Amino acid sequence: MQKLLIPSYSTPERNRQVLLVERPTAIPEARHFAIDEEALKSPAEGEFLVRNIYLSVDPAQRGWAADVNNYSPPVPIGGVMRALAVGVVVESRHPDFVAGDFVYGWLGWQDYAVVGPQQVMSQIKNPAAPLSAYAGVLGLNGVTAYLGLNKLGRPVTGDTVLVSTAAGSVGSVVGQLARHSGCHTIGLTGTDAKVEQCRNHFGYDIGINYKTAPVAEQLAQHAPQGINVFFDNVGGPILDTGLRAMAVAGRVVQCGTASVAAWNPPPQGLRNEREVLTRRLVWSGFVMFDHMADFPAAVQELEAMIVQGKLHYDEDIEQGIEHAPGSISALYAGENAGKKLIYLG
Ligand SMILES: NC(=O)c1ccc[n+]([C@@H]2O[C@H](COP(=O)([O-])OP(=O)(O)OC[C@H]3O[C@@H](n4cnc5c(N)ncnc54)[C@H](OP(=O)(O)O)[C@@H]3O)[C@@H](O)[C@H]2O)c1
Image (tube, rainbow, N blue to C red):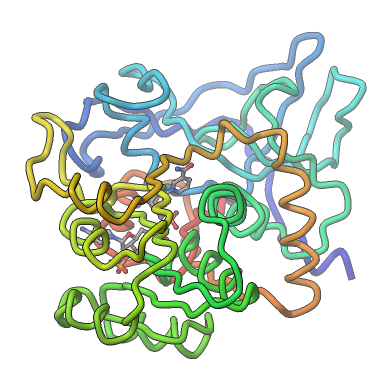
């Protein structure tokens, strides 16, 4: 059974790497990266060599590549693009990691990474789901949904929960978890096909195409008592509209700002502080990396839900490292149908 969960992978003799060669001022495009290769490095004492199998593509990489207003220092020019990935240990000089172990963590956009335990977010001992899932629904994306919703959104039965990027890898999990908590769920997404996916695959009560539907009117219709929890991944006009539809004492989880084209100069928009005041809102920023102590328990919970058939997830997997450089801009264009991964088999 376990074999079916693990894809085949090769062990090439050189390490291809995606390097950041130009600092993006907005969404990183293929031209900001170059692919180079180097000889394989050997692990020093306390380190291990990992063959990457699935590279993760994340909207957060835009912030990691930029040099303004982020929670972590930018990737240096000429450096390997910072990325999460799932891989297999092929050589180890650390007692807790042996050849054949699967790991998820800070492995970068490259074929191989020499790392230590501090770069590992999960040691995948007995995969209960396909290995790719540990880079998405059982990795950053699913855990962000789980912890952001439960710790900051704190939904209770009967609440109305609004989710932006509702069909995406974070949003689709937020919607399903909220529904399991007995909430009325409304998802915002960018195509009619994704609206269908939200309704029929991820179980949202309502799906709204924010590009074609009048969002304020739709929210008034589908949340007449107001929104109790807004899990927002986009910011901008959608956030402005959502704040004006919140119920008193509502919670806004600011998890992403995907709709904001650039942060410098600071974006201008509606001034909605009056909505925060009069509706007595709690508006909290969420960064998953502040909650690493809760990561293993969240993975365990999500894994159990997948095994029980209670949590659905989609993946959009391309094969070959040459697809990595253009993959962030494709993600921001909404071209992905599920968690975007690059398979290096
Ligand atoms: N704070 C944290 O710790 C943390 C961790 C992980 C992810 N996140 C955030 O969560 C969000 C979703 O991440 P994900 O990995 O699940 O990606 P995703 O939703 O699978 O893909 C990104 C989606 O963003 C939507 N989008 C892009 N531009 C947009 C715009 N201008 N307006 C509205 N929607 C837009 C597109 O969906 P549509 O086709 O529906 O427009 C696109 O498919 C991102 O903002 C990301 O930064 C935060």
